[in-house]
Length: 529
Image (tube, rainbow, N blue to C red; front, side, top):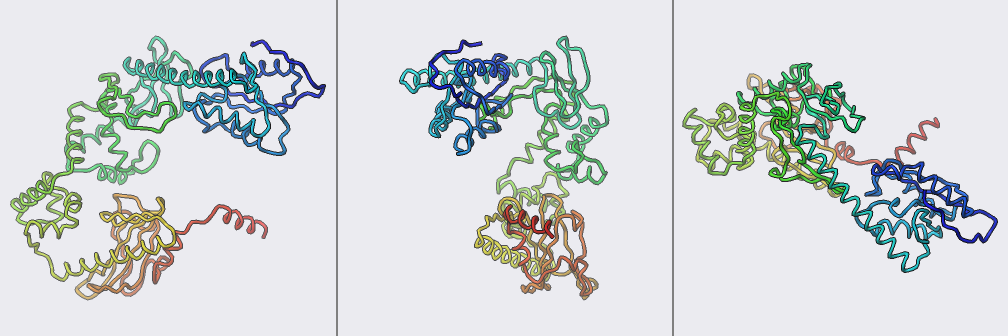
């Protein structure tokens, strides 16, 4: 325990002080008990009474985030109702080991500005504002920042060493994998459940295939993707149709499948340092050549040959072909099939995808014109589709203009026909004319997209080849089956009357946000009734 310094006592009335305690995880000497003892000894010698206690235990000193005690202290020193005139701190580094050394100085200055003195009970100098004291405090803050940098480097090197020895270091293991806890002699202790972590410092963790059928499902996912003309989204739909959920008991998404297909842990390779966030900085992607890879660290789930085939296929899918390559592919499809359409493009695995063609040319019709191909389509149907597209674009333009005029940020994705409002609300705008039964009985059909997520489907109705809008149906998520065609109106009667609107005023109201104080006020009025 540091020796308490002595100074003359000017009054018999004890000073009222607050103590700030912060313990990180670096040294036992900075434990809360040790700091309290040092502060109590100093207060007893100097006739100081501690009336408030602020403690941040086990919290990093790199940032002010997640340090509620320090935040509350800074708020209280500016309050006229505070009951103390001094703050007792163990040493300069207890404010924090900030990489910007001026940050710790600012928090001390904030206390002094409010008329509250700061005393460091374990420092060999008086905090009296003298030039020598200022130099010593600046040096202490720089040493604290350097200590954090050195500790960060040592921790990273320690993790790298564990990875090279075949141990798992942080992060969830992935679907179909489990974590096994080992003791210091590499003897298996037990399997770690989700949110369960090792408690003994010398214990280590490895990865092994799961035993409940998930590993077999992973192998089947790799087999489907490697041997069939199928996408990650299609695999997700297939699993959902089977009634199978992912590791979080939720529906499969295409990104879940892509994460599995790219994870080298399934071939037994331990990969570390793909992202970095050292010293509380923002997360960054590490270049792939700088990743730490240890092949053969774990028991593989998937054969490496199958894994390599999957990576090759995914690389081809990620690569964006040039316009020349797309047009060559279209010519080859015409030569093989004698025609060109969405179905023929999806039939031939070597053909450019419909999405690639539409991204490059804007639409299939534009691609047909570019290569001089005349599709054998019904002229009336082609004209009708052009009208639908034109009205959709007009509705989108008017809606965007009105929403932006009301202060909303709106982003329109043309390839999916979706509007994203204020970065949160996502909706799809479509305009459709009726299908005909026996050439004279019209009915309108809607389809909820199954390859991307939306919150609302805005469905406008027009007559065939007529630009005048009849009405709108605003379908919320869950009202329609994804991927299925649903009859909206037939024989002059709507099957979804509750969602039918003459215009889009209801949509504009949905986009409005309500302040929290308004919700609270409404709730309080309801409780008073």
